[in-house]
Length: 187
Image 1 (cartoon, rainbow, N blue to C red):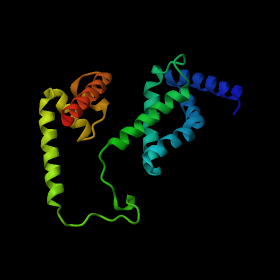
Image 2 (cartoon, helix red, strand yellow; image 1 turned 120 degrees about the vertical axis):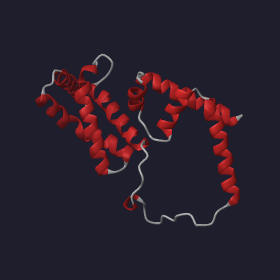
Image 3 (cartoon, helix red, strand yellow; image 1 turned 180 degrees about the vertical axis):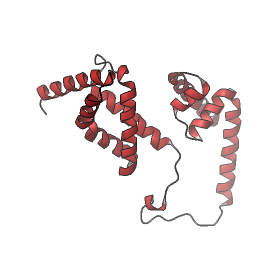
Image 4 (spheres, rainbow, N blue to C red; image 1 turned 180 degrees about the horizontal axis):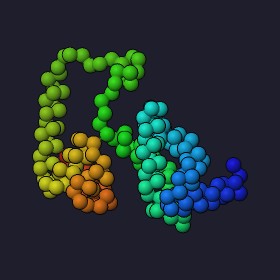
């Protein structure tokens, strides 16, 4: 695609986004037709399952519909904005703790034997004990947020609602808490 075609597509998508922000369903349908293939490819590369990619893409387009007023053409192209939404939604899906089905496990999978390695078991319990001591040093609210995010798979948006904090605050708390844990565990 040459530069003039890219520029025209960007302008068309920006105009469609303005109409979508005004809740125009025909503009949304046209926006979907023009962008779904690219966004599906982005999502599929991240989640690696076609069925799941379709679900994630649908959720991403719902978010585009809901957040169309937030789009600012001065800050970037509509496609980049939509790609970020789809990518983030796909990453959230991957972060969720989901058990694998037997169909998802490739051939040649060799589960570990039943033998218990006492040294490995001791090392794991020592690491867990160290982690628990470091977690205890965190502020109670931040400790709960870290555990919900990384043990239970809660998204930042869910945590923001639950703790009545803005999403950027949750992101900052998670990043700082992980840094504190890393420092504590390495000392």
